Image (cartoon, rainbow, N blue to C red; front, side):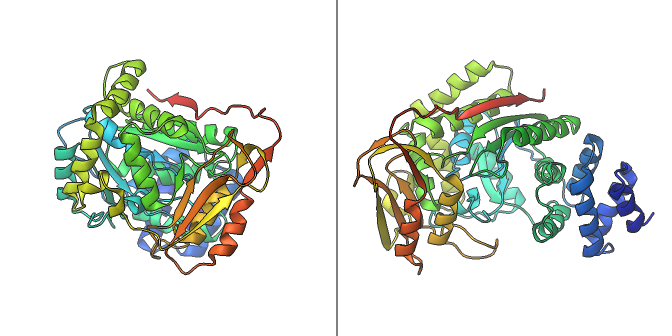
Amino acid sequence: MTAYEIITKKKRNAELSTDEINWITAGYTSGSIPDHQMSALLMAICFSSLSERETVDLTMAMAHSGEMLRPDTGGFNVDKHSTGGVGDKVTLICAPIAAACGVFVPKMSGRGLGHTGGTIDKLGSIAGFRTSLSYDEFIRNVRKAGLAVSGQTENLVPADKKIYALRNVTATVDSIPLICSSIMSKKLACGADGIVLDVKVGDGAFMKDLKSAEDLAELMVRVGKRAGKKCSAVLTNMDKPLGRTVGNSLETIEAIEALKGNSAGDLHEVAVTLAAEMIFTAGERSREECRSMAENAIRSGSALERLQKMIELQGGDPRVTEDSSLFPQAKRRAEIFAPESGYINGISCEETGLISMKLGAGRLAKDLPIDYSAGIVFDKTVGDKVCRGDRLAVLYTSSDCDLESIAEDMKGVFKYSESNDIPKEKNVIKILKGY
């Protein structure tokens, strides 16, 4: 078999065999298949798509291109993954809740890229916190705290690293089978017993419409099930920033406050729903019982204790959970005021993310430094009544950016209406079960 034959076959919308998928994935990972031929195949896949069987084969080929981990924690391991959004600090809330309820959460995360922040970057805002752990230390910490969050090892899914980099520069990112194989290959390689997927839908998400999000979620759940995993997906709303903060230290502070019970609305609903789904995946209780357990873990303080223990084990200062001044403090700030009276009927999620990136909270390339103090705190959200001159948000930064120009752009993020007839949107749209 040759790469030319495989490309031609997929270009003509024919199904590739398992052997063909394994061969070309291994060849590209090793370097024997050049970029230009893999680029051609990726473009053919974008036009012709992949069947479910082909998607499973590609996912497994990518997963097996490097280490296949088997976390020996002594309990049931559940991994949670988000497809990315603006203000998405949910892992920092739902993982400690699940751990407090007896679930082991070995979480390997990547750094954020573009306008969606990564969990590793949020935890990096805690002084001394180590996100680079040996695998043995990572597992020891999970056993002690119930959870650990670490950067991915270099030997984990090397095929995905190479293929994703190629997709990023060849306009082949927006293919549901390719998105599925990228996400699920990493989840399967991490070796958890159960996988809970948070699939974001809306303006600030990669999947802008419900149909595309459902298609992706259903495919990922079926792939997980066919790989022998307990897997489910929760579709959540990303038409506005999640919670009240965007930016690494600011989001970490908000997550801590949520674990203290000082959060309501969208962030609480999404985090508790996902935590309950993780608990449900690990046991035999009903979803209602699991939700009650999740809420109680917040009320009792046991979830916050799990986060504190994880921070301590990974070299961070657990006092940050009681004193937010220990986080990086911004050197500059700009307040945003309402230019008119009325009701806020929209906040552009994607534009908010791009503004936070300009402030220094995001990065254009994975190895670039970020400003941990940078970000946005919202005083008002969708549905709130405002009068002209009311403060809407505060921008924070320590970077050398044009703060005045960014503040002007921020004013355009808010949309107004004269009456409060804004339809109430669901924070949690749907749960898709795979078992």
